Length: 231
Image 1 (cartoon, rainbow, N blue to C red):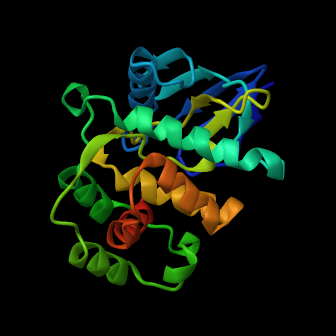
Image 2: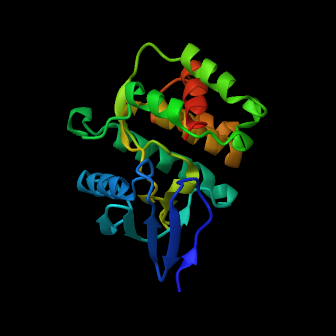
């Protein structure tokens, strides 16, 4: 029997059985097949990702990624190694050639999608709790960055979407890659540092950015976290 998986915000019906996950949706905006093609692309380019078993319109079937979620309660002595492994993964992903990426997630694409999205106003980040749709849109448009530092982004690089080998503390794979594409590097960095701060504290996010090799960018961090509210 297939067991329903309720975690996540993909908008698709997700079930699992015997180490296999099925993602189904009739909504073109969710596009499980598009996610499957992105996972295949990542694996071809050396980034560990879920193995695709079946991929067709409205359906994606993947093998479970072995390992433990980065969002799990890791022992304190392992946390720095986990943070460093996540930074290493992000560096490798962002080093892929943008020119060879067939998926476009630049603001010219994502802002129109955001404006058409059905926002879950009951699930906003704490600093925007109680905001109206109009207020969210107004802030999004008024703070849009003028320049995009393009890399290949996962698009939803949060801790639950990364798994690690609990023996080696190395990344064993990423999942939920439906928003993969060329985008500003802060589209990933803003999301993973928010996720990391929530789980491990702000010092962990500082260490991650240091290992990744960038200084904090409050303006882009705020913008891309706001953009994520729409998806």
